[in-house]
Image (cartoon, rainbow, N blue to C red):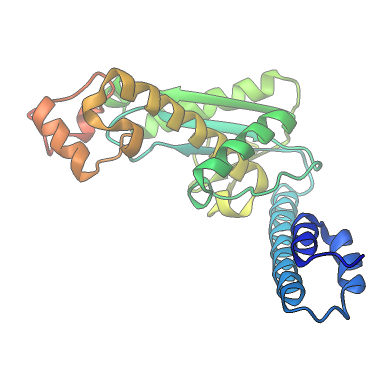
Length: 257
């Protein structure tokens, strides 16, 4: 009995690379327009998956090279620029396998995918940690000190697990925190463990800002995540600052010194 185009389309839609190769051979002489279209669509999907797999493999290979083959911990931060909420830093030690699909700079990953990737990072990582530095501390000590403290605490927590990374991979500029430090420009888009740290930090901080939104609903934290959107600035001007605002970041819109 001849399979319907709908049946074939469904099979092709679920096929992995090996199954697609088999189906492609089986259907090579099927001249139905719908089958040809379904094959072309599946071919594009398989090729996109192959390209994405090569991109992620490249991130793991880049990390091996940056760390000179040593076990590495990657660190990244989110929340440096907002005018409300914490600075959040994450540290992640990834194994060589399994590879985590979709790893990338958190800003390049859709929110629903970030949730899935963050869960996989926490499941498969050899060690991970997240640290928050809240607004009052940032106001008192400054962002540079906040970054150093958060990165140091995250490193200490990972070292305490006994995983013992021999290389510390940092996104961006050197902090001089640790003799193991290696700085990677645009590391969150190039290096697997830094990307993983970027994603779990982003997911954790976004969840915190949604929780803060229920406490301080007038500021729209669930959507702006503490960044200075036009609506957020207007809310500051109308309502003043909440306890999670960074007063030193809000001087343009308040009377605070």
